[in-house]
Each structure stands twice: as C-alpha cells, then as structure tokens.
Length: 202
Ligand code: GLN
Image (cartoon, rainbow, N blue to C red; front, side, top):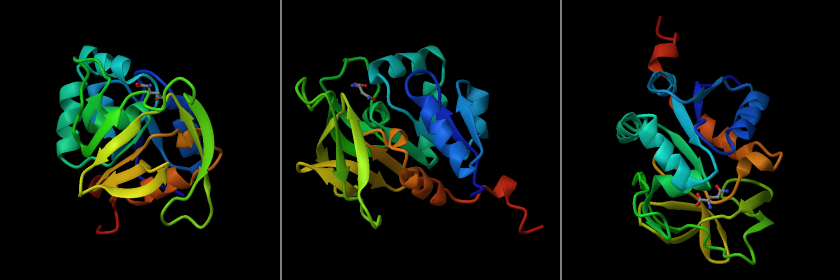
C-alpha cells in the first residue's frame, strides 16, 4: 500500500510502534518534532504517552501554534490514548494548563478506568470490520460525552472507545500494539490525495 506521507508526532510516548505499523503497510512516514516536519506531512498520528507532558512539549517546541493551524485547516489526524485526550474539547482530571485542542467534540476523563483496571485488553466490535479487534487499554481515558457530530465506531461498557469527526479519528486504546493494522489502514485510506504528489493531471 503506497500512501500519503504520514507524520507521527514524536515528542514523547509510543510513537515508534506507529511507525512500525506504517512501515508494514508500506506507507511513507516521518517522525515529527519540528515545524518544518509538520508542514511536510499529509496526515498526523498523535500517539499514546502522557498527555500533560506532550502538551508541555508542544509548547516548548513551538509546535502548538502550527499544529492548531494545521488542524483548523483539516489535517487528517489519528489520536490514540493521550492523543485522544489532546484532541478533545474538554479534559476532566487534567492539569489546568494542559491543552485541549478541541478538534473532536468529546469530554474525556484522564485515567478514567481507575487503578483496578488501569490496563486491560478486550475484543471490540468496530463498525466496518468483519471480525473483532483486540484493543489494548493502558491508563486509558474514558469518553464521558460525545457531541452529535461525532461518529462512534466502537464502544466498551457503554463508553465510546473509537470515534471519528470529519478528518479526526481517535482511539482510547493503543491500536499500534495489537499486531493488527486495520485501524491504521482505514485511517490512511481516508487521507485525500495530496495535490503536490498527485501526478495524474500532468
Ligand atoms: N494516562 C495518560 C494521559 O493522561 C494516557 C495513557 C496512554 O496514552 N497510554 O495522558
């Protein structure tokens, strides 16, 4: 599968496993740490990790402004776990100074599964997939509210765990850890062809 250039935000967290899945799919990808790299990519994955730390590093690296601008312009983005938290409208149990980028209309509670269940795996039914997906949850956020414009693609115990709003897809779990590339594949398939790399009109 050849595809658009997909960036993986590589300030902190589980970015390497996303790059491996993209490599396995044959999708060109780039670790994003600078403004220049962010401008080059046709889509972006914001990985799991620690949303408060990632938020602080977005500030320190100066990427926060350019990222907000690209998101406003419709950059296709896949946010997993901490990435979901960063992209949500409202963060409960967050740090007061952490960014909620507001790209998908969700209220999300950090570490919402509590200490007993802070890491678990379960098979989930994903809309459009013909068999279950093994979902790995690690100190995962709980989606407590999803706005009307949000498509819910999978649920666990009455809470959305895979959601989409326009070009923004988010997972409360870690799809890069399941040895199953279907979520990445369907994300990449929805990225519009970049006019810069489309030679069909020449
Ligand atoms: N609990 C983390 C946070 O608040 C998210 C955990 C993860 O990404 N695996 O950012």
